[in-house]
Length: 338
Image 1 (cartoon, rainbow, N blue to C red):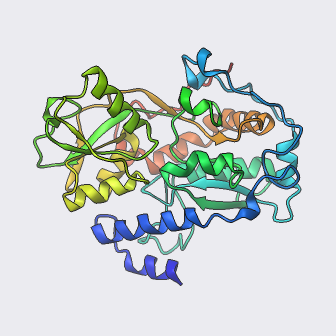
Image 2: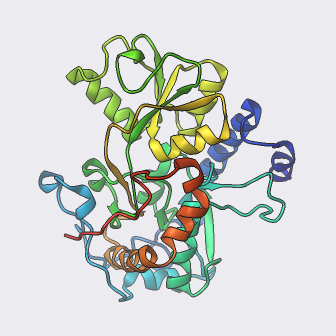
């Protein structure tokens, strides 16, 4: 009933009220993740007998996107547990409010309540390969700050949610090879004097999400002096989309986030725009529980096929209209394995 009222009330993505309600709904759904999906060694993820330490140690981590194991078709303990569930579905943590990545389009009656977007297309491809049915998926809305806890607790089999592969995160979860290349960028009101990640951020309130690479970069750059010293790094928010709401409410002057996400948010609200160019290089990966090497290898094999058949179609449909021509993200990244 709540979901119906939400969809009925949304008439576009530019309104502050609609965005705020959507963010609150995503947080509530994430907090209600049921315990039935917790890994127990028999029907969930992270069961007994799995190979441990599948990712390289942080001390050896210099190129985190190249530390995933080689692709394989073999079923192992993790995949067998997924296939043997009474409810034979893949449980995936996603975003339900990121325009063109993972969202419900209130202006598309044909989509109904179904999630759609670039990340959602990839989830369907993974489910089809592992379970033979692209719709054999149980989607779980997971805020930015809860992605790793949801994986570690076994509440999801994987997270496909614009999640950057980093050395620090490799200490906590396993990653597939990269499926998308992006970088950090500034989003700000179109009429502001902000021109990018530069001195125009002086005395400006900058919003970012908790546990995000954006927040980590802001705090690191403050220490090294790359970020102008008078910039105000606001306390991070639980969900990245909350920053757009704060920008719309005048509670923040700028947002720092992945450029691909920023482009989609600018498409939602014509009063904001991307400022300057990306100032980092980052790669998204599918995140899974440490020790689930058979699942990681299978996802890598699926991605190898998906880059050849599926990736470009999804990119052209969802992201090309907002990112434009000749964007650094327009081709899938080349996979390298450890």
